[in-house]
Length: 477
Ligand code: CS2
Image 1 (cartoon, rainbow, N blue to C red):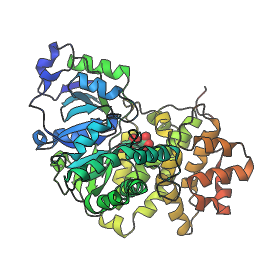
Image 2: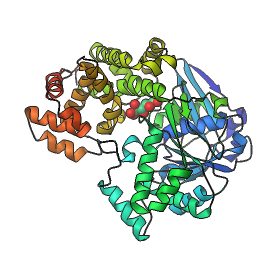
Image 3: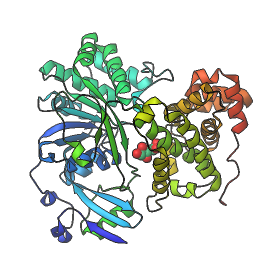
Image 4: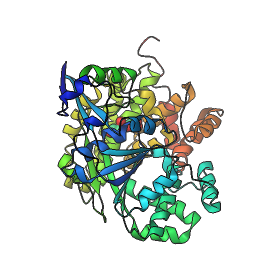
């Protein structure tokens, strides 16, 4: 196994911990505020910013979501952390210095202060698909309990909002009050039209609190759409040990990712941005074909493997892909997705789908990346709306069955009935639907994902027939 340190920091070898002496240059000023300080943010946006040619001008203040832990751990090492690029042939290590401030997300005053600062030009988001609180109709669900609670807090001024969107709206109100002008909000969550979704969710929430603020956001703030890609499993104790062995220091917050990364962006940056293209990011005028290619082919296959794979007794993506039944399901789903990616926009964008599929197989098969299916399985009701439903709808509009996309939904239903732990914003509704039986149960579950599809008796029947496909375990328990 090859081990390569890319920091130019060979002196690190004697250091007991990753610390500020590893900073190659003085800290950059905060010009980016991030919500969602997790592993993916660190392996992606922070990594791109670190590699951009003008990294010295662009520091990130990164806020956690529900818990302060990641911010506390990172602050202890001055925001520095190691990105471990894990290839089939070995690891390489990069110390990333772009996060100059790591903050507990509950510190909403600090968030407001930084978002209101004139130097802040960009707000990036990795708050998870489910956090946009979209209903099955694609609009902000104003009845969701945490949305209701945040609106009450915002309205009464009696406390700080607790959801990422509530916090962002609060901070944008501070920017408006400070007269600090426009900035770009860059959504980095795996959603179709994610810039539009972020816009609708933020403006929707703001409007339910203060119409004037909603109008100001609508006319002043730019919402940039992006397609983000880098497989980044949760960090484990073994990863900490690998960094210690490879680099000679102890890092409490390394992140392990595949060598591949991709970032496609579309939209305006009225107050400027880092030269992310220097690190390989691509700016396009029409993002939809890229977005669909990634959401359907990569994320769609991931969700299919997450449910089918676990039903068959597998734990990781790489393991599930060695199972012929799972692989066949993925290939069939890719065929359906591909047939609907090659429209006018997709053709013009030259999506190179055969090469993309081949690359995905290689990426998924990287057995050194232990990407746990249970992690991908979370929040399925939201994810399937982006990953399975559009392909199923497109197939049916073309007069075909959409059986492979329907199989993903059937596998989710089977998994939901069998899983010991089921994380989903609609977990209670799923449990209630699971108390029904037969066709009624299938219709109720499908209604949580897409009410229109649930009204189509042929689709309900198709899914019912496909349930049980992965019932037979591939491996003995
Ligand atoms: C995965 C993604 O957990 C999931 O739902 O499909 O996190 C996936 O690994 C990333 O989008 C890869 O870029």
